[in-house]
Length: 420
View 1 (cartoon, one colour):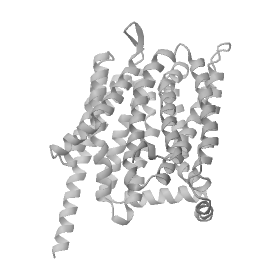
View 2: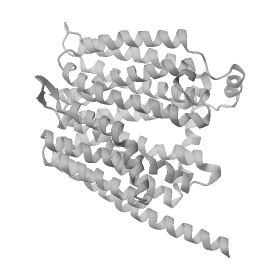
View 3: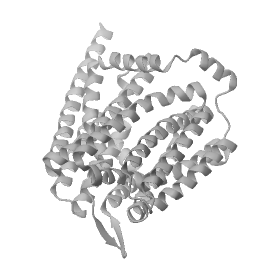
View 4: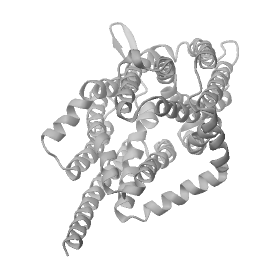
């Protein structure tokens, strides 16, 4: 599907994907450091735990609301929340007033709501407008754009955010208003009126929806293979989630590049984005060419996560930060494809969608638990915290290895039963 054949909604959404990602990565990764400077590691960890729990509930509600009220409507509501976010941030960083961190907390919460509502509706809009055969190509285009913003946003934010936070928020506020106007005037609703009327009749209330989702997850987790996968993936995701929380505080210093004082954290985020953009597909093809089994890939990936934490823990110099991020990104890349394919492989044919949805739940759990490590830093320090994370990933590697052993026994048993 060529770009000129894309629906107008998709073309505008691609531009907005870049803008949203650019704005997000310019300031959001540094908010953990901002909160820590005011509240300390202990309180910040507890604060972010509460905010991430709130965001997780909003994510579960996002799809329900997009089905019930339409994609465009929810994207408009999300855009209003984004405008409100930057109003709170501008109050917090207004030059003529002392900094008001409480408004930054409100802004952080509304950012979570925006992401939950906007992402659910915008992804559903792509599914509405693109044929199944063309969806991988379209989503991969959005994925490339997202990784470009991961490279560019933090590098600029690392230079400007700590010097001119108010002006960054003012610029983002103006851009957010423009984006709201674009959605309102240029987008069309992708859920047809008759279909939406049926959805309004058939979609249950929000509490029933949440209850059904959790009940469905619990049924799937009774599958021992999937249950082991979920435990291992939670441990890995807790480790990976430190990328946006504990590492932001740990890499809190600057180095000079071409006369500019650049934040170390910005550089390691850029390394992650560059590696995914340049080597993501290459590494995945290499794993296929070498004919590595999923069992081997999962063990290597988890081992890479563990090694990266140990490298980070050695020293906060740019050398060890860069080496740690390279190893971590390697593990992230090689695990992307096997993660989805393995879930599809173990799921019964009539439950594949439910298994894939349940596979996202460990990520949600990890995002809630991960901020606690900021609290741990205040008690046990960075080095021991990184060691604990390395142990988590090593345990995940052993669980994956055992899980595939059990899966091989299950397949052998089913094969025997078919031949009897």
